[in-house]
Image (cartoon, rainbow, N blue to C red; front, side, top):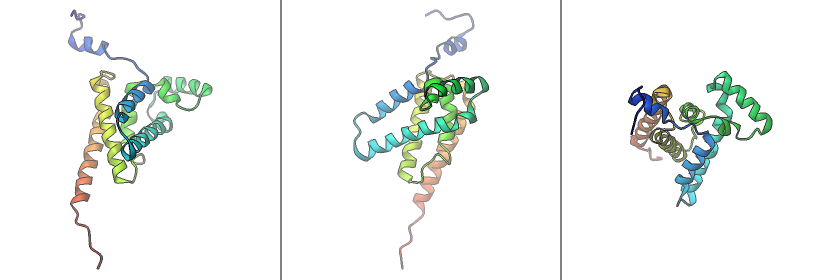
Length: 167
């Protein structure tokens, strides 16, 4: 396989696919939902719904001026799901860095763990499928990793505290 003169790094950077968020999420959640039923399925569906809500609610916090203009134009045609239809995988990584923190984390510990697990899997999927350039999104990737690891430590600490018996 011939590589351009710019070297391996430039070659792989050119291979990054520019897909919008909606098909990424559809493919990811379809895969996660396959074969699931009952509470497991319900929890995954809640995570997808909450992530899509997060996208719409938090777009102004992470998008640059040009993207905000595109988003505003798209919202004039159809409000619901505009962010997922117009923005890309790199924007999704920035959104995930918000999604793994309060106020987006649910209070229910099982749902919270499900949300964090799926956010971690989705982030890995974006990297493995080369939908984002790691170098371009390194800061939100670190934020995601720190938030998930912190939650895991807190969950273990809560589990280690013995429950008091009523007297």
